[in-house]
Image (cartoon, rainbow, N blue to C red):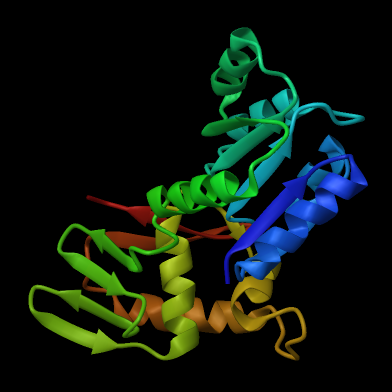
Length: 224
């Protein structure tokens, strides 16, 4: 499930965007101000942000700047009533990936969202290639030099998520919410067990490593 965070202080605009995105099958989170955006990202994995500029407490420019400085590489689609070239330029300088002006054409917005997700290898590609290793999301298989193995569903999703964002640290809670779901009765030690299984399974694969980050969680490191 793709998680999109809608950061918009106007409740009517926020509700409209939430409704449109949910209708397309996305899981939607919302935030009313810049500080809430950062708080949400601390506890929940997000694949893309629709980010308004004019928000209380912290504006969209500052949110984007802080996210990029913290190495959050998720796509950011900045949305604003500001239409001057210097406003758009500032948005790109602080790290946004795309920029739309209000009033929003929802069909155009959906096209831009799909394009950004596609570029980040979350949607449509459904395959990851790391050197000679290929992960196929639809078949749950990992193939290397002609040899293929099918993984249990949770193991595959965990590996795919980590390798989709090499170098990014995911907390155990984020991984539990994303892969096992908010209502699961499993504990976060389940993530540890699955990581250990993946390490043993791919111990002879030099293309990547699964690294523990003390006190935080896990990240994948690509070696090619």
